[in-house]
Length: 407
Image (cartoon, rainbow, N blue to C red; front, side, top):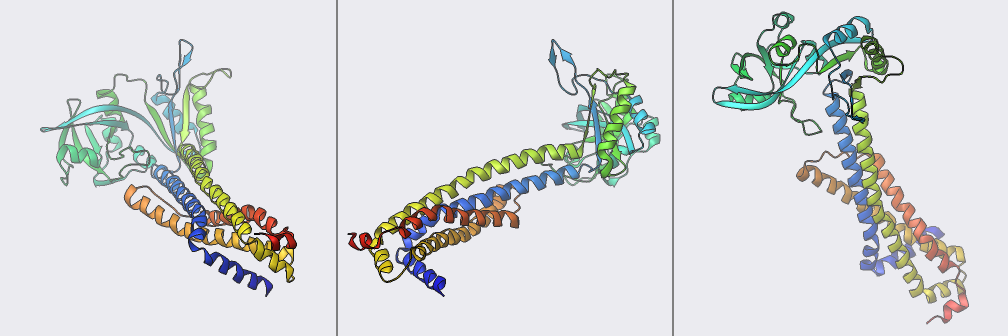
């Protein structure tokens, strides 16, 4: 009952100075709203990255050429060719944890059809490439192993290539185009996928039989650009990568003291890398936004100290008629907690509204999680308790006689 009375007294005290109470809450409101908005943007980006990576095949493995040293400087992955078709064949024959394997060559090319032309890139691979990369043909059909063996001049194109070469809404299947002056027939249209999280247009691509691209468009008939594989399941991806690494080291006759001249990556690796970056950015943004909460807490402490000074005689009268120090302490703590609690509620609403506006007008993916709301709310309450303690303690420690004499 005593607590209820103290709550009523605290509410009346705050209600006397509505504008000051609101301005005191403002720091908490902005802080909580900012934290929720930043966490929502960060979580939305993380989930969007994961979805984008998963759309490329959740259990796919990629092998790229290694690096080389030039003048004592390590040039980085892919700086020179080390992979061959025999490497892909060895992985297919000896790696039990891999279900699909294809060698691949890629190149930037100029595509011409009639009076239209477009700069894109072509991938030459076995038909398994479509399954490994989670690509579907929405119109026409895919090429066959027979087309690959015969180096047939057929291809599958993405929607972006189709729109720019044949026109929007036109069916490209059966049409002819020239790739670096070599005629190809379009036999299939890839299902539209749009841009990925990294801004790359996944529909700006041409896929053709491996032997066709290697023999007719590439300068080297020995080395390949990469190897794509698919694990038997997501659970064995790491073991499959190790197994592939062991096989390739044997293929390349590398000694134990020599570094790998190839790089093995999985979609999970890419997701983890960008997920970690997104997590770091989220923490950074949330930390910056949390500064507003600290500023709001300092505002609460300042206003509460002013309130203690203004109400010194009131505190003296209450103590003179029997109120104890802890009663005064609890009353001022209730006021501080009430300010941070109400400010936290308004801040949560502000954060949700801000997140919605960012998603609508900024095009950013946002995801508000219950944990972020709860965390922000708890933090705001903790700020009220922490910064309200000193003024409340100061009020509770006043001498009743000195307080009654205060002018």
